[in-house]
Length: 366
Image 1 (spheres, rainbow, N blue to C red):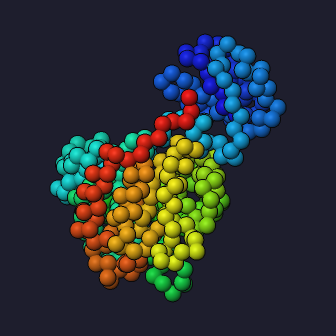
Image 2: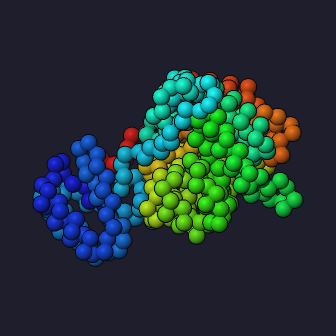
């Protein structure tokens, strides 16, 4: 249930309403807009008298929400959520770009942030898997110079075959942190199990992969952290199921979530997966959480990453997650879908031209 209050509600009436609602064991999420205050009620609202609330002087309207996801629902939270991470002053003198595409020297004072959502756009780039200290630092420098806002790199790798490269694990995290120290870029890496949480203490954004999207025990545990969570859509999951997985994290108190469309499994075999671009405007309408697109895993084909990145940006995505490798032909993981640093630079420049005309839906909540 959502209660939309009139502008500048009288404080005593507001406090009485909140106290009454809490007496019914309801959790209240308040969203404060410019002219509107919204109270989102989570819990059993079946006994709540909507007509009685609607008759109060401070109440504009009351709406019941039929969607099973509550915290992630835009009706609860009309304003877009913005996820931000600081870009530190690295040891290098390389350049990065702010959210408007302006290049910024790493010698700039601290306070610069990489942001995703609410009109801010960032590219997360880096290797599918960390292979060596030299490799990840080299790639980090390259993608930062081209304007990437985050460095991605897999330390723990979920692979279909038990005989495939499984990642460098804790050593991979160490190399990512060294790349962060050199470049200042916040890092993104995938967690596979609750037992690994301590290793991710210094990781800026924790990624939950497609295979773990419905690992509910892991999601609940991540709900108790204060780190941004990048939640990827499962291979065969619906969009509602994706939002319900986000709900698991948010129910624990962590509302810093980035949704990721990475392609779904269909009957088509020409590409690795089928990129569902319709997910972007649908999620924008239903939820306030930012949505990014991973065209690398979606297509599995290097030549398709650029056009799909442009299409996703045009459709209104808040960012991209792109795999970049300095020697794709000899990559230990997903080489055929990885861009070279030069190809990534071309992509970043192309995206800068698409951004001004990308789709910006109006908030469906009045």
